Amino acid sequence: FPVTIYHLTNISANFSDAIILLDSNLNLIPATLSPLAADYLTSIHNNGFIQCIYKASRIQGATISLIDHILTNSSTPNIITGSLISDISDHYLTFICLPIHKKFSNFKRKSLGPSRALTIPLIQHPFFKN
Image (cartoon, rainbow, N blue to C red; front, side):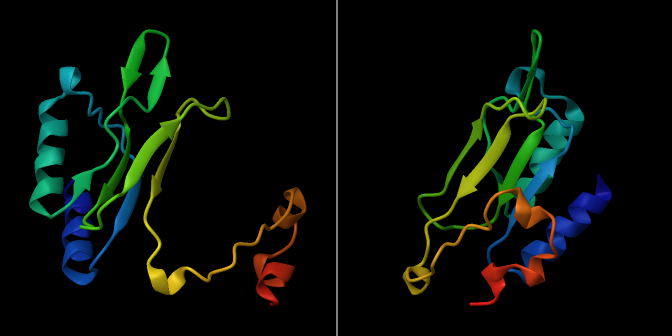
C-alpha cells in the first residue's frame, strides 16, 4: 500500500480537513489484525488520520470483518460514524455525519426525486436550475 500512504501524505499536507472512504480489504477487527493491517493503521496515524469505523462492516456466515474504512484528519468534535445493515450489498452501508458550520445553516436541501433523476444528466436536473 505505498501508493495509499503517498496519497495520505499529500492529502494531509495540502488539505485542512479530509474524509477518505475505502473498501480496503484489510480487516481491522482487533482479534484478526494481520501485520499488514497493523502497518496500515500505523501509517494512517503517522499521517494524522484516524479510522472512524470500529465495528464489523461485513458479515458473511460466521466470518466478520471490518474492511470498509472511513478515515479523517479532521479535529471537528461530534463526528458521528456507523454502519447500517442493508440487503443491497454484502457490505453494510457505512456513513459519517459532520456538524454543519453555522455559515451553511441556511442551505436548502432538495431531493433529486425518484429514479428519474438517474436518467438525465445531473446538470440538466431542476435541482441545479434554482
